[in-house]
Image 1 (cartoon, helix red, strand yellow):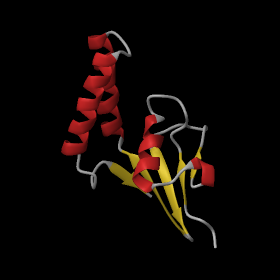
Image 2 (spheres, one colour):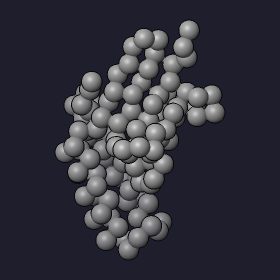
Image 3 (cartoon, one colour):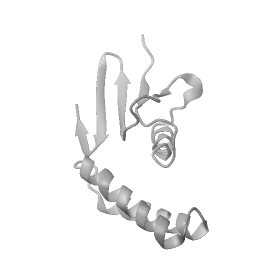
Length: 110
C-alpha cells in the first residue's frame, strides 16, 4: 500500500514557503518520512493531498492571494522591512484571515 503524502506546489522561497509550515503542522506530516514533498517548479499556493488512489488539489483562489500580497506589501512599506513590528503586524493579519476567511470558499479544488 502506498503511504499517504502531501505534494506541496509552494516551493521554498519566503514568504509563500511559510505555507509549508502550515501543511506540516496541520497534518502532522513531515518531509523526513516523505509525507511532504515540496516542488520547486511553478511555485504557487496549492497542495495535492494523496491517500491510496484518491487525491485532491487545493489552490488558494487568486483574489485571496492578491489580498494577502497587497497586505504584505503595505506592511513592508509601513514598517520599513522585516523587523519585529512588521512581524507583529503580519501575525495580527494572519489571525484576522483565520477568523474572517471561510475555509469552504477560499480554495479552488480539482
